[in-house]
Amino acid sequence: MTDTQEANGVILIVDDSKANLELLSDYLTKAGFHTMEAMNGENALKQVEYKAPDLILLDVLMPGIDGFETCKQLKASPFAHNIPVIFMSALSETIDKVKGFSLGAVDYIAKPFQEEELLARVGVHVKLRSLTQTLERQNLTLKQEITEREAAEAALKKEIKERETAEAALQKLTVELEKRVEERTSELKKALEELQQAQLQMVQNEKMSSLGQLVAGVAHEINNPVGFICNNIAYAKEYSQDLINIVRLYQQHYPNPEAEIKEEAEAVEIEFLIRDLPQLLDSMDLGTDRIRNLSLSLRNFSRSDSSNQVQVNIHDGIESTLLILGHRLKAKGDRPKIEVIKNYGDLPDVSCYPGLLNQVFMNVIANAIDALEISNEPPPGTTEESPSTTTKIAPNPIATIRISTEVVENCAIVRISDNGPGIPEEVRSKLFEPMFTTKPIGQGTGLGLSISRDIVVEKHGGQLKCISAPGQGTVFVIEVPLEPLENSSSQTRPSESPTQEWADEKTVLIS
Image (cartoon, rainbow, N blue to C red; front, side, top):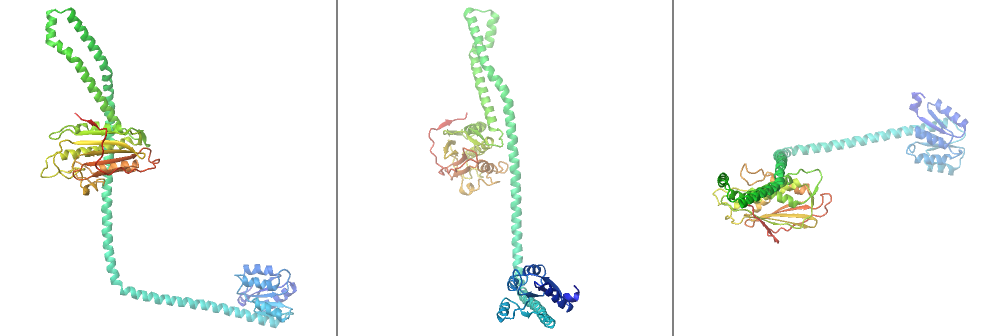
């Protein structure tokens, strides 16, 4: 195919007669057209999909699908519906021509072919198709130009409007930038505070971990010698009583000893020794028993937590905490002894992290002691604040801490209350915030209750509440599910009244 032929157009000839195909191809090729050939409608449809011609010469009578059906499918095809079709047939009936035109044909050539007529008709329709395509392209170009002009006009109007409002927009932008600077400054300040809180909390956690290891080590080292003493005191009592019995027998059977023995007996006060030695051994037994209990409490308090919760009796943790804080419960200066009243319920073992839960008991009870110490101080000119109170009242003659436990809806509830001065609402609402403290500088970090809340809420899926009002004391309610966090299915809501009924009270005076 030459460039000239391609420029003149491509003609698809469809005829079941090979002679007709050769004849028509010869006419068209000499006239400068490029030809494609198909001997049936099916082949023609395939060739059109492969390459679209500029015009189709279509025979009417063909085996398989005839020319009318082929034309119908061509006009329905997205590849060929715009290609002009000229029917070729020996049929000269008007009805056949009308049918062809109704199916979309543009012309009708009768057989036998006349070369001049054929080339004239083909030339006209190829030129018409070319002009139509050119017109379509020009229309498309014109539409694009119109669209571009409309867009340009709209852009110009928009630019004019933007210029008119530029000053207002600039002012608004200035305000927004100032606002963003303030917001960013606030965010940076908040991030710095959170970083400081995290650092302090890490230090506090490390201190508690180191303290736990130290206490556990000391308790372990004390336990060995104390165990040795406890195991041998019984024998010491038995042996000393045997010696006393022998001395009594000597005194009974030899009432008049030698002068040297008599002088030595008077010098050492033998009768006093006989009376005092059993009492001395009993005191040693009592003392070692207390040391052993203290060692056991220290080990129980500082026990390391595994990655999983374990079943423990939380009463043991409370008792260990009270024993460790025993020195603060004693009378001190003008402050009387702090009375601890316990009302333990029938509590089953609780799945928890015992070391962390003991830390919560330690923080809450220590805060209660702080509140009671302040409530018994004479009102100074400058008030020292504690995490439990900023309100000063008259000294309390009977400082009391009450501890009760019970089971409510598959949860262990521990209430720790004091009869201190209470907490104002503006302080109580901030108790669990990190870094918040009402203690003087150097006496508190503001992390104790915040860490306690995280332990109870985050680690155990429970709740930690504070119920208080000025002059009515303070109650901390610790709620821990009996089962591990992933298995707990209920959340309790303990009473929010600061006044509780305490039945079957057991009073413990720390001497």
